[in-house]
Every structure is written in structure tokens, then in C-alpha cells.
Length: 494
Image (tube, rainbow, N blue to C red; front, side, top):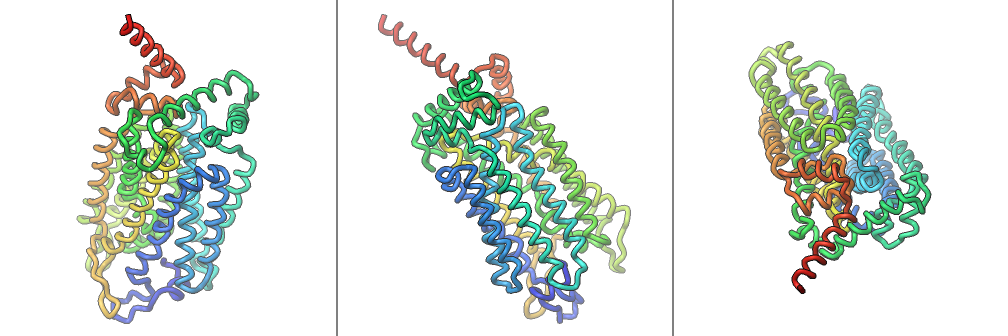
């Protein structure tokens, strides 16, 4: 939104005397950023039928085709076509943002699931970094290629994802849910690198089928079942996923990555493109660290540490910004204050990237039982994109200065004071995590079902340790419960 050619094509020239030059009005700025998130919201909701009817694997491939269509439309020079392209690309992004963590969760071994699903967030950060580098390389080109090249590069990543998915198996849990037991065992064999009739494949097969049958006894797997307070605590699990994704957006992280260049420029920082690239490098590097910590430190603990760290950093940025860091009347800036602001923004990003960035996606794929997983995950991811849309649309009105003239817009003009809001929401993230997010480190998806059935959030760490110490499986639990019921029946009969 700061490229000269793009602004001359889609923006307007300031004639109000405020020396804005070519600029995009605040309503259009809100629209072009947030409309992608509107598409992703509906894409996430469509991930349930795509994932449960077409399948996890082929649903991802079909989603890439939708995304590519949207990317192609954004190469047009007409505003309406560009916006429609953003919506369609958003549909594709919304679909894959639900289906990929779902596929990863269902195919990963329990001791590596956190790291593997965390790679989804790492791929996002690498994409953001590469986008920033490409944008910096093309921003000074004098023609449409300055913005068309960064958009067209997205075709490459869609093609890589499609080619990779073609050689991978379908999710065995999806196949077993659909009653395709032979295909499910074959997929399990590939993922476990064991023969189909091996004890390891048989044990995993029995575990999945036992948990699936127990879930089916509690409900048909409808949307209503997602919110019922069953023995498996479906309602708590669904709402935890929905609210986790909402809180992730309320950390304010996308303010930096959507509006960082514009914000740093308005704060008087020279070469804001370079600062944005630095932020993306920090995000990528620390996400690598975060993916390694998920299965070592634990999900719950990382979220608590990350929320506390982000809260402190954002309040420091806000306080420095409104005191020593603002632009002086003579347009000079306090360089030490600017450096402090940049440093703590980077530290804040590091806390997010090692915690709320990857961990939320890991938990979203883990929390729901198989019978309602596609529906519950689609609702959770839709929550992410709904908040993403709302924050993306509202941010220019919160941060930008008011403009005058015929196209003038009245705004809150908060500037750096918006970090007081993000700091407060991070405090909310800490409180929510403490009371509603259990520790699931090292547990299989079926053992997580056991944890919700037999324990509480605050006692989850102790119960998790007991499950791991006893190596308790869902099959063993079902057999134990049946034996206890039989003994009770015999005693009653006697």
C-alpha cells in the first residue's frame, strides 16, 4: 500500500494541502486488507464439508486451486477485480488454514505432533519473510511489475503444496471415520513405516476405533454436538478452540505484519521496509525455536509465558511511544527512543513466535474428538479469521490520523497508543489460558479424549503425567470401565 505505481493505479492524489501525495483513503485501505480475511472466514467454515466429504488430502489440493484463481484475479488493474481476487484467494487460504493443521494432527506421532503442526506456523513466517524481501526488491520498479511480481510468486507455493500432497497418504483417521478400514490400515502402515498386519498398526487401529466408537455413542457428530456438555466435554473443547484463535488475533501481532511498514513510517522511522524485514526475520527465527519447545516445555506453559512477555513488551512500546518516541513539532525524532521502540517490538514478536504463534494451531488440531473434529476446527479457524477481519478493518480507523476535504475521514488517531489495547488483551490471554487450556504434551489424540473425560483443566498436568507413567490407552480405559461395570452388576445381583 506504499508502492508508487500501485497507489497511482488504485489510490488518489491529495489536493487538501496536507501533502499526502498519492495515498489510499482509509476506507479503501481497510477494505483491501480486511477483505481477504472475510474470504478466509467463509473458507474456514467450508473446510468442514471439504475435509469430511472430499477428504483431508484432496481437500487441501482443491483449496490450492481456489487460492490460485484468486491470485490470478489480483493481477488485474481494475479495483473491483482486484478485490474479488482477494476474496477468492481468502477462501482458499481459509480452507487450507483448517485442513492442513487437521491433516498434520491426525498423521503425526504423539511425541512429535507439536513440532510438526508448529511447522505450519513456521511456513507462514517464512512466507511473510520472503514476501517482505520480494516487496523490498520490487518496490522501486516504475511499472505494474512492482506489485504484480510479489502477487504472482504465490503461484509457486500453491504448486509446491499440491505436488507434495499428491505423494502423501490420506489421513488414516479420516478413512476410519468413513468406514474404510482397509485403506485406513494401509495409511497407518505408511505413516508408521510398518507392515499393515504389524502389532504397531493393529494397536493404533484399535485405539482410534475405540475412541471413535465412544464419541459416536455421545452423539451423531452434528454441529449441535460440538456444543453439548457430554462426558467428553465437547462444548468446553469447541469453545476453547474458538476462543484460543480469537485471543491469538487479539495479541495484536497482525497489526505489525499488516500495517507495520505504514506504522513505522508514520512514527518517523527511516526505511520502514528494512524494519519490516527485520521483524519478519525475528518472527521466522524465533518460530523455529518455538516449534522445538512445544513438545519439551508444553503447550499450556508456553502460552502463559508468551502472554506475560507480550503484555510487558506492548506496554513498554506504548509508554515509550507516547512519551519520548513521538515525532517532535520540528519533525525531528528521538533516536534512542525509536531504537527502544523497535527493540521491544522485536522482543514482543519473539514471545509471540515461540508461543501463541505455533501453539494455538497445535491445540486447535488436538482438542476436538474425531467425530466432530472437522466441524469444531472449522469453527475455531473461522473465529481466527473473523477476528483477523475485524482487527484488519478497524486498525486504520484506530491508528491513522484524520483527513479533511471531500474524502476526509474522522479516525481515533491513536498511533502508538494502540499498544495499550494490545497489552491489555495479552493480559486477557494469560487469564484465559490459566483457566481453560489443559496441558496435552506427549499425549495421543485419543489420550487427550481421556484427559477431558477424566480430569479438569487445572489438574490436567497431574493426570497427563499419570497417563504417560501408566502408558494408559483408550482401549485399556474402555476395558477397565467395562470390567468395573461387570463387577458392579455381579455385586448387585448377589
